[in-house]
Length: 142
Image (cartoon, rainbow, N blue to C red):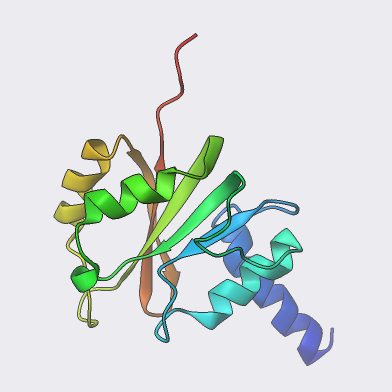
């Protein structure tokens, strides 16, 4: 395997570990200079599409929400992120890890999620400087 092929596999691995799949539409909200480019590239490789921005007006499968402590009210941010989410979709809330500028306390996520109508399903180390919390809306009753 060449170095380039190995690098591509590593990049794919980041997004695959977070459950991204080919042909998903991923909306990115809150991108800034500190966002992890390796993770972003990995997602684009796996989904075979560019990330769409917050102005995208169609439904999306996943929202990638970069959030820092000084970004405002987390409940409002999560409610806004749900707006374009398809039934069965989810949000990856990415926050700086402990000790990094903009770190969000896990207790803040615990409090904000249910208020925004979301449930946490998992938390992972999403990238070198970022933690990820997977959030889903409860399934609608029929």
